[in-house]
Image (cartoon, rainbow, N blue to C red; front, side, top):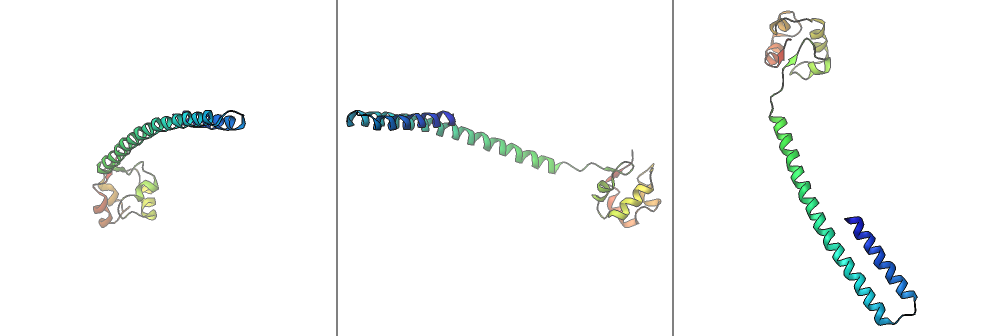
Length: 137
């Protein structure tokens, strides 16, 4: 729709230039300029309506994105499987640094979550902080 407006405006401008270069009378030039201006004015009204509609659609989509983000943040975190998680994934657990993540990986496989603590991969305090956030599968 915007392209149609631009083409119409360019055509109107071209008509103005052509009419100015010929030997026609000033009244005819004035009428052609008025007609071209009227076409531009109508085209801009249509473009404004289209822009308004696009802006409303963008606002609706923006609201949907915000609601999706809110819903995603409210979803509880899935437990980290200590038997398959990467070092980086293990480090997302509270109190687990790179060295501790390596110890957890070296202690695999785990048959129960309690084994993460009993095998000495983490301290008792670390285990208490992660016990509800880990799983074994």
